[in-house]
Image (cartoon, rainbow, N blue to C red; front, side, top):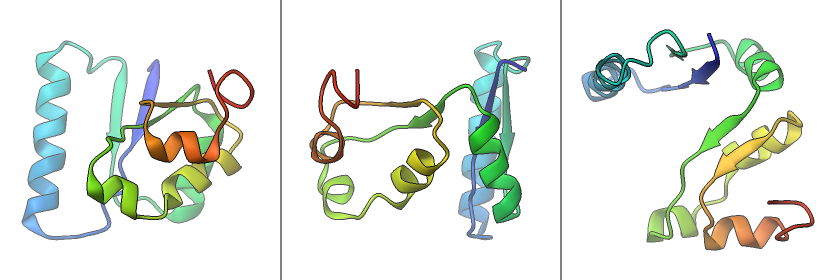
Length: 104
């Protein structure tokens, strides 16, 4: 597998399971199922080990109110792992990183 995408969906409601199922179907439809693996409900230590061993971590953000108003705990975990983070250029990212210094 080229990429491993850790999806730590903690909620056990049917909505979360449906989102995971839709994500897996979309990956198959794109023909990327040999390159992307989706995990859910991982033990926290295992999740951190995946972060550290990944080639890159994805953090899709937007400039919507929800992304701008919350503290980015996932960003903290990703940064702690010292792994490349791929994200969009948003106000939140610009708050914590400097272009061409700590981010490209």
